[in-house]
Length: 461
Image (cartoon, rainbow, N blue to C red; front, side, top):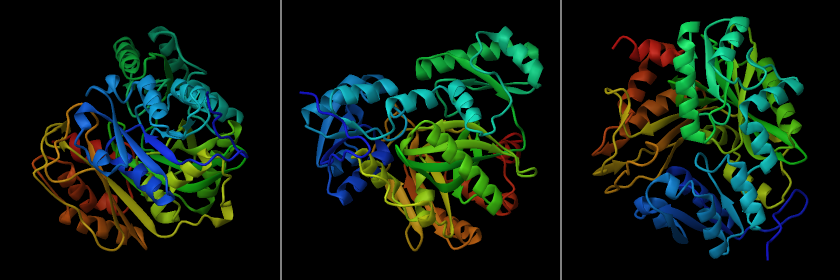
C-alpha cells in the first residue's frame, strides 16, 4: 500500500533515508542522518562499491552499472531500492535526480518522502523561462531577454537585436554552465544555438533555449532560502563570482560587495520569489550584481542543496541538511529571521581532480596519499582516503575546503595555511591554482567578477 508523504503540518518521522547520490555530498548527508538518529542507506553504482559513503553507511545497495544513466540517474531503480529497503525518504543531494520533478512525483506515488520541494515547485523553477516570469511577477528584477524560450536561431537574433549584443543562450531546463553559449554578433548565432541546444538536450533531455543579455563586470551572488511551505526566510548570501567558464571555483559568505541595505534588498527579493511558489526545503536564488550601481538581476533558482552550502553553515551556525530532513518530515521552521545572524566570514575552495595546466582537464586515478588540514575554523567535506580510486564516470569534485575567520582577511589567511597543509598524492588537483588565486592582490581586496579568472589567470597563458 502506498504511504502518504509528509506535508507541512502533518509530521511523519523519518527513520531511514536512502541517499541517492555519491561522493562528498553523500558523506555529508550521511553524517546529518547519523546526528539525527536516522538510519542511512547508501545507493551506489558498481564503480563506487569501495567508496567512503558505502563504507560509512548503515547499509548499502547497488542500483546499477558505472554509467550515471544506468545508476544515479535511474529514477525507478532509486525508488525501487528505497521501497525494498523500507526507507521513509530519499535525499537526492545535488546534481543527478535532485531537480527532477518526475522523480519527486515517482517518490510520492511510492509513498516515499522526497527530501526537497514539491514537484510543482521544481517544475516551475526548473524551467528557467518560467522562473524568470515568476520572478518578475514577484517584483524581482530580471535581466533583459526573451519572454520565454525561443524556437530557433532566427528568433534568438531578433531578441538579441532588441536587447543588444552580447547575449547568452541558456538552457531552459538546466544550469551549471551546460547548454550555455555567449554570442557577440548575429553571424555567430546559428552555430552557437545548435551547440547550446544540443548540449542542453544531452545534459537535461530538453534542448529548449532562452536568451538574456550577457552582463560583463558583474558579480554572481546567491541567496540561501529555507521554507516550510508556509513561511520562508533567508540565511544571507554567498558570493560565487570566482568561476571559470560558468563553473564555480571559490565561494564565500558574506559577499564583500554588499552593504547592509543591498543585503536587505536582495534577501527580501529572494524571499518574495520563494514565497511565490510556496517553497519547501532548502533552495538558492541566484542573481547577477553590478557592484557599482547596486543593481541586481535574478538568474535562476536551484531547488536543492548547493555544493557551496557549507559557507552559509559556517557563518550562521545552521545545519542546512538537518533542516532539509526535518522540514521533509513535516516539521515547521523552528527559527525566525531574527534568529539569523552572519558571524565572521567563510570561504570555500572546490578541490577537483583536474590538471589546471591543461585546460582543467579531469584526471581520474588512484589517490596514493591523503592528508587533510585541520585546526580552528577549518572544515573538510570530502570522500577521499588513501588508496581510493577516482572513477572516470562522474564529476571531478574531490571535496571542499572551507575556512572561517572573524574577518575576511583572517579567513583568507586560514585558507592559505590549510591549502599548504592539504596533501593529495597520485592525481593532479586544483590545489596549486587556489594557492595562486588567494595570493593575488585583486582577490585579497575583493575585486573579482565572473570573468576575473579568465582575464587574470587563463587568457594570456
